Length: 574
Image 1 (cartoon, helix red, strand yellow):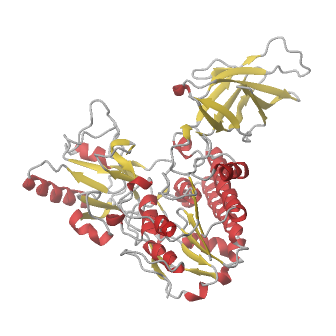
Image 2 (tube, rainbow, N blue to C red; image 1 turned 135 degrees about the vertical axis):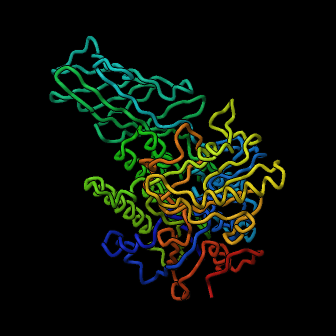
Image 3 (cartoon, rainbow, N blue to C red; image 1 turned 30 degrees about the horizontal axis):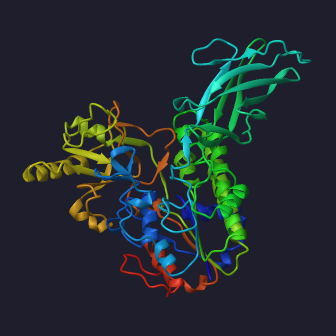
């Protein structure tokens, strides 16, 4: 018996069904006769990638799994992430409950885990790192402006001297540096003429050479950074080209080293040769910083997803396993950026967004096509949450500063002074109060803050910002509690994004251009419901339409007839 768990981050079952009806997902449509969809599936609160995946792999609520968000308040941690007092909820070391991988391994089953959240550092054999694993990350993407015209911030493009060329235009050359903060290497960019205009770019350096056309991504370039070998791609676009002057935009992708895994060396080499170098999450950070256009972002994001598709194909054809775990973040990043724009009043913006969403779900269908021939394999296609459009943003820590409850560190202004502050917010939903306050002051502040925030209205829309605010002692209803849960648990309206960043800005603003939709509100909202789809020989064995992500853990173990300890989920098999 074989099982595949395919996690498709942020896949919405309602959008998926509509895309099937539109004929955009022919592979899934052709498998409907052996599918069962749990149409009333429930995610966790918070409905975050880390929290929901922890529920899938432990069968436990956040209180027990220890994963209370993508970011976890843990001031004593030695595994700091983003801040000195937080750790990553996507790191396997953050788990407080035993993941299913250990239970399956102890049962003698062979597993292959590819880029699955919370699987790295590896807890069992045959784990391949990927998304949200920063051991292979070397440097961020970069943007360069190269120009023959003197302009601030542009790198000079100069004619190459003493060149005998038949073209009426001379080749132009510029020197630029990669990863300057790491004292990275210098490369030459040579703009090549063809038929009276500039048509290609050559990148030369470190014994490497690439030639590529505008608006296309180059082949991989190998680069040495502080003793580590990394890989990146380039893309250029001609911004302006006149009689005398030309200006181009040059970008490169994020730089990653070789794929990290604990596979044996032979299998690891075969995997990287077949699947290719890892690209990260498709330039999402560069897009958010305005370095990448939406077209460049989409091109990288789709290529990142294609890496997952090649990995799935390799796993099916070349590796022996009893259960395969694999993950794609495609729809999460895609819908964050474009889902909210599908109702835009700007027709061209709306059309672009709708096409991007269609293409994203079509790409997911390509992934499902890889498992289509596997008649006797049990496949669970699952998402961690859905997503709903939003318009507004509340910087909660900036608001707490206005209340004189929060103070910044003098030496690190982006960090909270935990000792001095009386209240502070940790994304996605937790407000912690200073435990060193007198008990009466602590209780008074807790109830005052809850009352004030419940009445808080957006100054532009007039809408209430929060659907509900729970005290920690009441949050067990959401599966929360314990030291990693805030003293107040915030549940925002679907229209509001809660940011924990400390800035000089006012608390309220429009949501960032790269965040048109999110998954922060109550999991009871229809748009936040996750996908849980079974494909395989037991499709007729399921009858109930209600399920929880927690139920995946006991369901998989019951398939393999492996006993497990007490968990919050229940097997979906009769």
